[in-house]
Amino acid sequence: MAIAALHSAATGLSALSSAIDVTANNLANANTVGFKSSRVNFQDLLYLQKAQPGVENANGDQRPAGIQVGLGTRISNTQADFTTGSPQKTNADFDVMVSGDGLFKVSILPDQGDGVGYTRAGNFFRNGEGDLVLGNADGPRLEPAINIPEGVNKIEISPDGIISGVTPGTNTPTELGQIQLASFVNPAGLESIGGNIFIETTGSGQPIEGTPGEGTLGTILHKYLESSNVDPVIELVTLIKTQRAGEMNSQTIQAADEALQVIGNLRRF
Image (cartoon, rainbow, N blue to C red; front, side):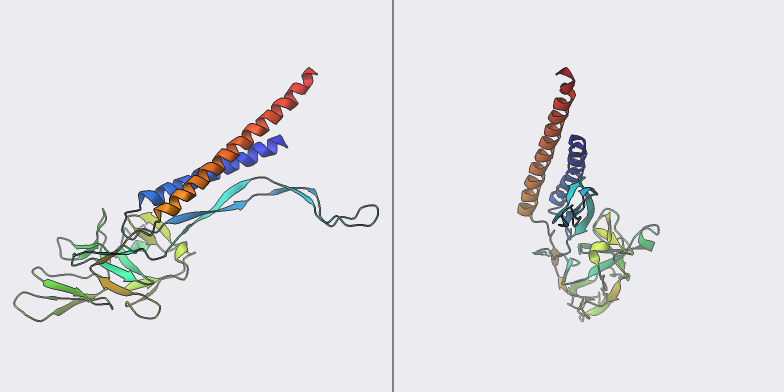
């Protein structure tokens, strides 16, 4: 059984190593706007059935429990936490936050999610053509596209996503476009592709699109950003627990190795 213990502990170390990677990524993105933390879910592996429960003995009595020896663990999935991060007040004209359920829709490369991505980050900019784009390295356009003409000032974004501003030569606000949101039956099934962007998968279901405040969709907070929902205290506690579990698996490997050494030394007696 020392061999089985070695393999079981090895699967534990491998899974825990990946768990540390996930925790490290969470902590690294503690200041990333709209970032959603992930947790690792584990599952046990196959079992050696040394004795079946319920088997009758010679007296006709049934064994109340069997003998089952597990063969380790593995990561079943990583689950994104879509709870809302803390609001952060800003003074930028195009900073927005979704209060409640919903994601912004942006255009991405055609080979990624059919050219459509979704994000909780609301740090938008106006590019050289006047279109609103997400403030990451690639600058994907907000969908549907919203163009802000040059010289427009006094930008206001209403809770239902209507963007208005005062154009040169006028004194009254003009409607410039409306932000749309999308939600998913299972947001944890979305695939993260980096840059604060998720894409649709079969597991997430198809997007349910609409205007902010419609149905279950949240509303828009203007000049606010959603902070990362990473809780550093929880992540550090998780990191400590994972490290200690790794140490215990290492000790299991050491104990199994010592047991094999004892067996190997039997030939000397």
